[in-house]
Image (cartoon, rainbow, N blue to C red):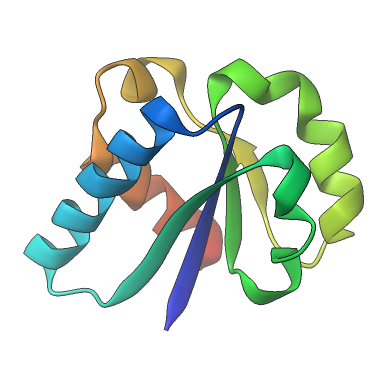
Length: 100
């Protein structure tokens, strides 16, 4: 099962996006594990995920996350517009592109 990690500041708005992404995955018939963690906890799971997406509000921490994953998985900042509109399908589709 694919795993997508969203990295955020506190997790409030990002948890909404996780739910929207899970809805989009269910509509596609995809079984996928999507979850959000603050940057402080991300290091404990980066070895278990297929892609790491950063909320736009923590884009400045991309270098830190890159050093955590050491090139093993893709790391990208979520498109600000897709994030702002809580477009779970668009973000999910981008995650799939990065994984493949």
